[in-house]
Each structure stands twice: as C-alpha cells, then as structure tokens.
Image (tube, rainbow, N blue to C red):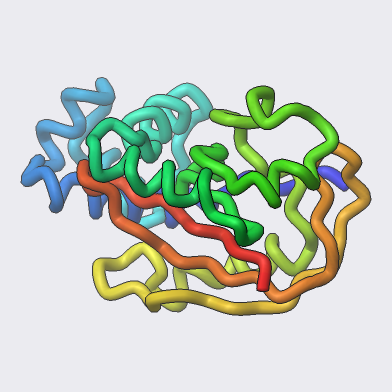
Length: 186
C-alpha cells in the first residue's frame, strides 16, 4: 500500500518555525537561506502555502536530526546496545538513526542498508493515523507529551516487518535543537 507524504505542509512549517526560534533566526534571514520571499516563509510556517518539492527537500535537509555531538552519539549507542526492541528515527523524516540488536534481528535486510533511510514506507495504518494527530496534540512544541502509546497492527513487509503490538513514541530533542523519536515495542 503506498504511503502518504511523511508530513503535511503545516508540520514542516511548524518545524521550520521552531528551528528559527531555537536559533534566533528571523524570517527574512530564513528567506535568504531558501531564496524565497519573507512572506513565503510566513505562509509555510502558518501552513497556508505548500512548499515545492525542491524547497521541501532543502528544508528537510536543514531540519533533519543528526547525531553530531558526543551526547547524541551516546544516545544512539544506548539504543544500539539495548536488549529491548527499539529504534531511533528522525522525528521529521523518519530516517533510521540507531537500532537495537533485537529490532535489527527482525529485519529481512541488513541494518547497514536501512540506517539513514526513511522507514515511513513500512508504516501500518495505525502508525499513519497516529502520525496525523501529532500536530493537533502539540507533539512538535517545546512542551510535547513525554510519550505516546498506541496499538498497531502488522504490515506485510519482509524487509521491516511490524507485528501487532503496543508502540511507544518518545520525542527527544537533540543537542542542535532537532528532534529524534525513540520507537519502542511494548
């Protein structure tokens, strides 16, 4: 089943707004960075205007979670060494950043082929549904809920199988202000 885009224009715009606030960047400066008018930045952030595909890729590259600091790499190591089924993804792009051995053992392809790739195409309808509620519950705001738990059905993927279970998502802010999501199977 084809998956929808990972985020609506509103959520990417909200993430851009949050990034600007964290880095104290004015809309006019962001407009220069992306080669658009300041009013375009305002419309993106308010969800009144969709980004063109090339603009969307540039914004996602800027806002994507990276494990650049020692603390962020330590978080990835904790996930990679955990005995529990879990993985860490970029909250914005769903790119796989780290994975526990028990989760990796479920994959039908080597972990090295999945690291850095979006896992969104493997999402179940329940995961897609929960993702669509994140903006309304303030998930990407500074006072986001500490964690969300929900039931998910399975998918038919041999590469990244998802089995019926309870999932827990925990949003974590990385050192550079970008966000990662810890995904656990309970």
